[in-house]
Length: 579
Image 1: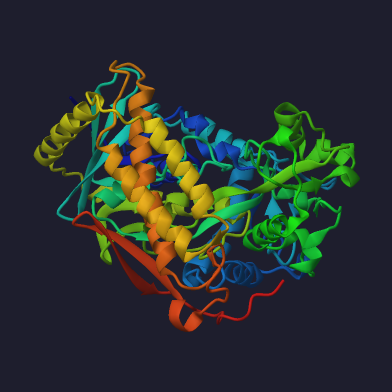
Image 2 (image 1 turned 120 degrees about the horizontal axis):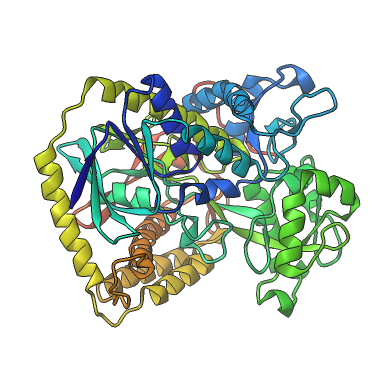
């Protein structure tokens, strides 16, 4: 077993992870050795799929916009479950991050005067989303990756699957990984670690997220006794292309696209008259499902069994679509042979973003039972600060990724520069035990296929933990997932080779998804109200008196223990959420 010593180890190579690496390197003037560990090639991280843009008040006063208004929109969009001190931090730092990426070379769309154009997004009072056509995430990732390649102190480990966080006596010591190219175990020893592995949207079958979005970092943290926060809040994006689930960016509606039911009606007038197609995502997702349930959905066997509604971009004109939504046009033509310039797109809600994740303080420091894990932070979608509360506003996610990437990079660098001693004996001892555990999984010859378990999990989450929820369905999901976890003990790994064993990787990911899905279902069953993306049939109103609180779930003696924590309110008292 190879043990590598670094000053900082970052798990995950999306926007949050790369931004953390850049900041840690700058903060130390290039003196710290930084390892960036990714289970994919770094540029294949799911951040490249972010389409619509990044939010920030670049021009205060224009359209009467302000930092305070951005904060209010975010808090209201969260259905008042966001921690408002964290929201204020986000909105104050977002403009400078957008300008940083301008300096790094992101080709923002600009007007004739060279000014960055801001487009409208759901739940925002005014346009405040900067964008690079509809490939914003890709361009931001490309800028970061190209920049990091020039830093000799940053080493990127592509295609390394981390299987164990090494946490001892409340202190981060490193992580154990499998090098996919060789199958060998490689341990990264460090006093400072950042988890930036994204969300777990692939726990659902119909999702906009990539197959890599399996919540690995969140599940690894949970296994070490680290608490998770607000796991029941899963965002469904209203406009996923049927039948694949590929994202049709909210920017399409920001540019003026309509939602139409089977009668050709713009039905959002009945659900959010003032915002129409630019209402928050939870409201539009419920509206679409309500239209379908009430017989105004559309059926077409060519697109599978799921009913859908239409997204209409035809009136935007081909020139505008080619300029601002070229990726959407290309996807639609390639996937289903439909040109949105002159045809309607079939769409329905799909799992898109997980508001819940690793419980952290405002600086991203990971928490366990309210206490900080020394030397460990979480940034991006995997870390629940909480900014998004019960519902994220589109384009706030990229702001969150880069701001908390920067912040955790600074924090990790500060620690690493003053504390360079590691517990090498303990790291080696735990790593050797982990190597034996992985060998046992690889050698498993049981009768259960991890792919069958994954398919059953997808069916369970799609059908019982969806846009609308009820006690009977959630209880069924809890029971079913518990059964799948038991069956996982009897899996078989057909591929016994060492090199690029995707069978082993997939099995490890299935376990992570099972663990996190169980948390989602149990926390959802416990929360007896409707708030944001969590909509209960039996409890159709928000209940601030009983439920204005974060859900905290912790693994204790093999069971999920659920407790609650107060929401931090600074300026904006909860009020009725109307659009």
